[in-house]
Figure 1 (cartoon, rainbow, N blue to C red):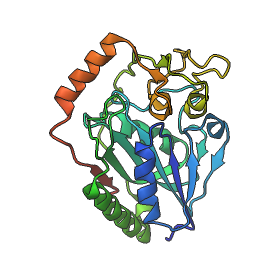
Figure 2: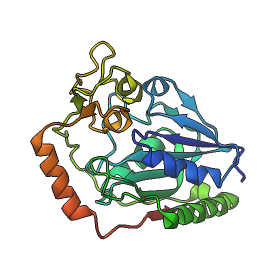
Figure 3: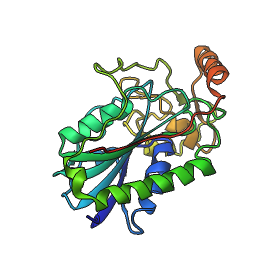
Length: 262
């Protein structure tokens, strides 16, 4: 089959997953449609897809799992034997159970996995880890991955085949990151942080504070602040980042892709 419509669907607070999903999508359709589930209002909607459409999904890996947010990331998506491509991006450690988790959530909602990939993106906590990813070799692999997806769709045997990805049951325990960003003396009150927070953890009336029951430590607010007005001030955070950089700057991992088999 040829997909009548291609959708790029992603949850991507710091745009690593978004970059890969869109890169793959553009090689499959010049007029693909985006659904940005990073925006809370978009996750409140329901999206339905049919068997003649193709959905490419992406999310980051946080401590080996998908980000754990109220209502879930992909629960608003409903397929009907809809071919799907599952992707995650991670900061050069491991993707552990996140890709399996994404696949199982979406297949339970009516999607049919035909391919999957785990891609390297800059680490949420460090600008030094996987700093230049995606590199040219990643973009080339994404193009080749898209070509493989086209070949799979052209052969109707995908409907009866099974996609297998790495991961374990039970999934790794979802960790609560004990570090939270907050406003500092540089905060100019622009409320950009409110706009980019994917979980509504920053109140427009008190933007220097963070609701720690909602925050997933994605640091989108820190990375998007135009005045360096938000940061994680805890000394333990700096020590944690130093340890991550010591372990993860090198060697750099490469993307891993998985294709459906008969």
